[in-house]
Image (cartoon, rainbow over all chains, first blue to last red; front, side, top):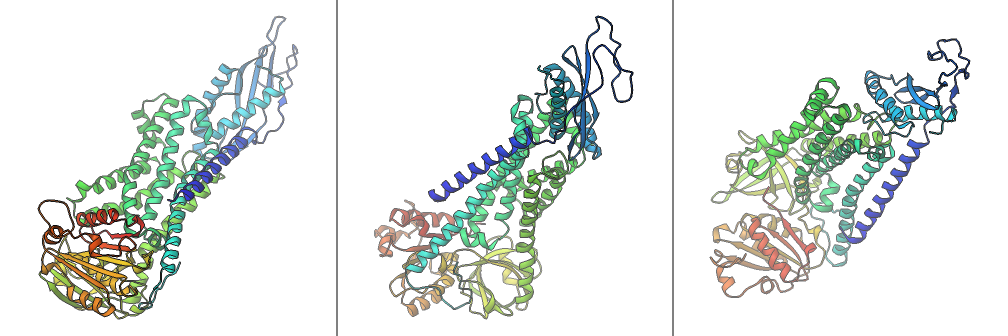
Length: 159
Length: 469
């Protein structure tokens, strides 16, 4: 190729790569549809009766830990919905319960069933939603972490 | 692009037009090559846009991410390979079919390495995520993941195709064996499709990559189907070529004249070649590339063939009336490839025959055309009488060089001319300001190219037909 053609191709390629990068980071950091998280009616020191909508929680005593559960919003992905409930005990993340996982096909059930425990452990270990992607389950990961993050935000969780 | 399709209507006589045509061809070649490179950037950009960058934000996913990228680049390169071999007219007119095929061959091994890397890296990456060693991961993939068994078969086919195409193996294989394995490439491409579009989330519904790759695959397969099967089929049905005459030119050398319908509408030029398939016992399974040895005259096509490979000696047994299936015309070794007003044609042995056909299409003011023929002895100067007649008629200079090369010294000249101090410049005085067309055995042709370059002929004005495939 002549030098001018090489230059055009080089500049064009660089431009399209940068555009791809920008589009990717925009979509996968902010673009997931996020609804506000809902705080479950678990008042401090006044444990509610356990019902279908809440997690079974230990009955608090005088010195009992403060346990709150927040449901993250339902995040829609093209493989199905994902919703996670975050449980905070004395301000620390002690559990992340997947209420809904992707179910559009057998494969997406398998993929998210594999990803969810890994994500749960990582969230507990990191005490944040800022954990890495689970290979082969990008959409589940993004939705899961997004739901967790919104729940944490609603809880005023500061890490 | 100017394309004088009609036989007998000639191209050009003055300098401006060849130069302009050359510029156009160069632009077209640059555009095609640029587009191929650009496609790799598009593939990577789509991968990033669909979230691929997240693989590279942590160590754990690095192997998987790199493996996916290797697979993407490898697939794109494989499609470029298929397009290079698809006989696309736009490619043939820009760079010529021989250069396209040379590029196709060069890409074979890189594609295989990329796809192998894709497999290895994903085995490692998935294995790390799931706590399995790569072998266990491979077994798990084949046994539990849909579409993956086909993908493994596709890879095995690719390995086989590349192995059978290695020079050392290919020479030991019959043409048909190699060709049959090569056709399996299309099967491999199709077998690998489900795991790309179904498994994982890479080309999933809703991603930009899905549309890009769908377009690319459908386009490539359509091009292959159209230009390698449908168009040749239609042309054969239209022209209905049959052998009209088989004539011995010299010991072991025959001319085959073919006639058919509407040959005046066949857009072929002197210097081009076709893939020929003679419908005759023992020959019809093999297609052979032979150049025309006479510019198409609207009535008949002629090739002149020396017995070389598997099928060419059996051409002697072809009888008039036999059906001929053809693919083509192909090649840029034509009068339209010129970039200046002066032309030098050099042919050796059987390589004289395309020169003979090209000569008829070159319409240059007297003195601007030199023809040099070379043969180890008189007998090897095939079609010499015809060349002499044409040169006399149009006033072209003709130099005939006969004799073996010297034992010492690498030269394309016979020993007598070499000893007498002849060079390409003394034989063709208008060098270096010429377009030089060379046809002959490859080592010999390389020596001509070497001397022409040394005499100052720019590379883009040297047109060498490759006869070795």
